[in-house]
Each structure stands twice: as structure tokens, then as C-alpha cells.
Length: 64
Length: 211
Image 1: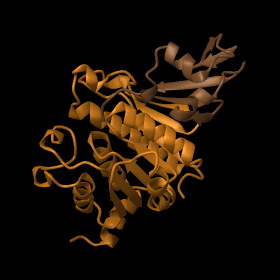
Image 2 (image 1 turned 45 degrees about the vertical axis):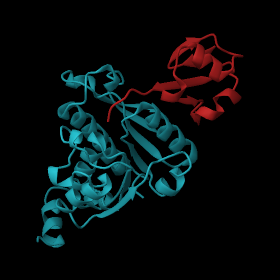
Image 3 (image 1 turned 120 degrees about the horizontal axis):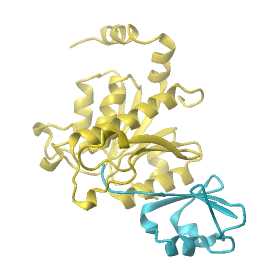
């Protein structure tokens, strides 16, 4: 099982970028951390989600 | 003109020496000098943070006056220069650096290297995401305090500070988007800026974060 933002997901084996896109995330507005390491946007497609990965996805909104 | 000894004496009376010294030795960079960044800089200067780096590519516009620290006399000036003027009127004895340029993935290291604490205070969500991911990826010793969600009026208590990743703290309600037509208004922006500045002070006073 994979943990994404604290919730269990059956996502092992999927490409990280494809998974996030299919989940509805706008890749230009998110920051992704996998197993405590930041994965920059241009490297998301190089990662395949593994069983027991812990992934955090933070979505930004506008304003400052 | 008040001298440094008099200012320091007033500061010493309110803080134990060890706190004052840690704040004075701290280095904080602020990326984006709009509603969040200009308020954060003023609060950190008032708190005696010794070295602030002020980064923005923009000039002061009349539409900024509803929530940013700038005044009519600053219209048209580069924001780093205008903010430097304001800070020098609050405490001229701290070290301020200004950078008038647009931050990209390619200049993150030269701008922010050597600053263990970085405030993300941009306004556009793609720029916020770029800064946070590139800073954390390229600078392994940096901790980022980011603002995310402070548009509109009311619901002050929805704005909170949370550690979201190993080296990332996020302040805001994480929901209200200026793109939804609710606008940015001074109180909520200042509340979020206060959260960010307060977390920075807390991190400075923790061991190992002040150098």
C-alpha cells in the first residue's frame, strides 16, 4: 500500500507523474515529496511509485 | 537620529540576551516583497533579525497600497529599494541585502545559498510551487516557510501554520484563491505574514537554525 497525504492508496507500480495528472493535480501548482525527498516537476515522470512509498502533495493557491 | 546603542538598549530590556543574540546572528531571505513579504520583512526587522535578504523583480504599483507596506512616495520604485527605505526608518543597524531580479530555477543557488531560512512570499501559484520545490531540491540545508491561502475577508482562524514536509512549513488556509475573485485584503494577508514571521522566529531560536 502507498500513503498519499496520509491516506492509503493502491497506486504501486504507476508512474508518479501520470498518477498525479490522473488524480486531477495541476502539475505547475504542486510540490511533491516522496519518502522525505522533494521531487522537482521535471523529474516526476522518472519515478515509479513503489509499495510502501510515502508521498506528500501540496497544492498552491494564488495570493501573496 | 537615534544611535545603535540606544536602540539596542531598548531591545535588551525586552529580551534575554541569548534570544537577542540568536536573532541578531540569524540570516533570513524573503522571496517576493508584496503583501506577505513586505509585512514579514518589517516584522522580522522589528524583532531584531540581523540579516535580511529582500528579493523581488517588481516595482511598487498603486494597486499594492491596499495591503503592502509601501507608501505613495514609493510608487514606481523597485520593491527591494522601497522596502529598504522603510526598514532603514525602523532599524538602520541591521544588515539588509536587496536583489531586484526574477527568481528562476537557474538563479536559486546564487541568490539563496547561505540562507538557512527562506520565506516564500510570491503571489502566483506556479511561482510558489517552483520556488519551494527548487529551493528544497537545490539547497539541502534550507528550510522554507511558505504562504498558501490568505485571500478574502473573515475566517481569521482558518489561517494556520503546519509542517507539511520535512523542511517545509506552510502558513495559510490552503484553500482561498485570489483567482476566485475574492481579492486580497490587508488583514488576512497580514495574519498570514504574521504566521510566517512567527514561525521564522521560532525556527531561529531552535538550536542549529540561526547560523
